[in-house]
Image (cartoon, rainbow, N blue to C red; front, side):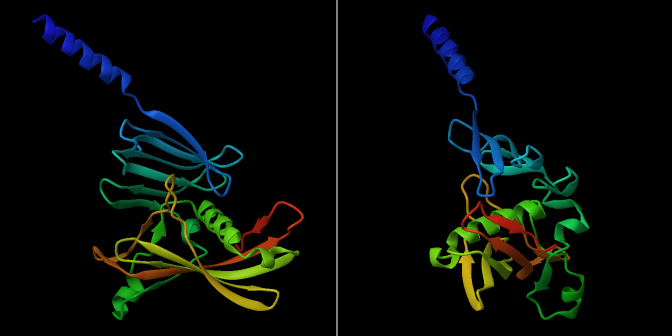
Length: 228
């Protein structure tokens, strides 16, 4: 009986000690992610991203490493631009501003699908998504292309599969020459997830395109100029 009591007390004591660990990490666009890891090293609990100025950009939650419940995206003024429920796999709110700069195309020959499909979208504010992608893209540009001030114009293409997996490509012009490169946005802290194009509960391959306009100045901190 005494042994059983000690075991029970020890188990309760250990369960009290097992708590989530708070983590804070800076992302490529200088935004900050705050989240928690459980005893197995998986994300669990609230997840939040704030801008370098402290404004909230994204809010959601994890359980056992998976996204759950409602996720919200915010613009620079704190307005909600997207709300998606992972449990229901349902889009609840999507503002026009969130997808206004994109050109969408669905990979299907059916005219009705092409006309009426729900466009794919990233679970990330439009502003932050572009900031993350351009920050990664600029790092991948060869150093010899960044030795002098220049204005870089380009087109980003996101190829989204039926399951939401995505590949990014950037075609850009610099000093009169045209280049094309792929960009990898996979990140263990925050991976930009896409909800694929849909029509009548069926998902489709699709693509999303938008333009970028970036000023490169090697003598100062890099400036990014959105082509809104």
